[in-house]
Length: 236
Image: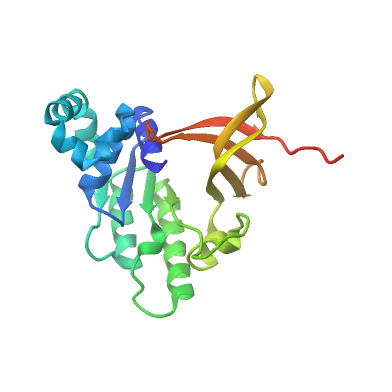
């Protein structure tokens, strides 16, 4: 979903960069190409080797966009950097004029000490200062804690409680089997089928906290689309 957002932000001329702390740059660019062209098979290496002419044509048609995006995407495929190294990377990007700086996932960062709470608190305070100084925003991806089968809740985010404390907005993307529900859009309310839900767990500076948004993920195109607001059923 983050890579799909990157495609949108880039098309809207929002200067955005992403630091991927898992997998290498080629992995993410290939998935980006698959999302852009809505062709899931582009992530299948066996299919690519069996269809070199098709992959060459697809890349040629989208080369300019992929090459442009690659200049704004960093990846760490060896040892994840420590939080102080990420602060340095963020500072450089902020000075370069990036308005949206993303880290995916922030919890992959290496801890220099065993004091996770203190390290992450200092990290977020430094990031907040950078954001105010250079007028940029930050998007940090994290994951649910291992063996979490409870309903989406801020206390189940991986990492220390600093992230839920200092973040202005927290979105929880939940994957699940298809559900049918009443979905509200600007055209009215209607019944629809969805297989992803975004829970708006925190919204410090805007309305909407507590809302659930219905999405549909298409595994054949690797694209996710927004349907609307999930309306709670009235209790009889």
